[in-house]
Length: 120
Image (tube, rainbow, N blue to C red; front, side, top):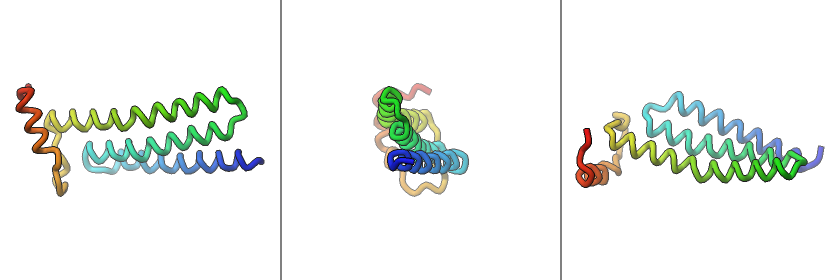
């Protein structure tokens, strides 16, 4: 086995571990905001590492380019989508976990609700 293939498999293995722990976070964390963090950080990093490992392992340049493009797409869209989901959840009334210490968005959310009118 060449060193490229070994490095690729290492990336894929590490990515699978990140995906696994991110999925565990989706199941184990107490509220939607913590679950979004697990999905955004762990699963995004894990999936990108798997795609980079695939790009390194494969001999076909077409597959490598597609894997890198997919990784770039995931890096751009996953955090944006998670932010939109968290903001929408907060503004629609989904509360933080009762043991949360700080709510930094509370004041800004009140301004947003005042500006747009509470549509409930």
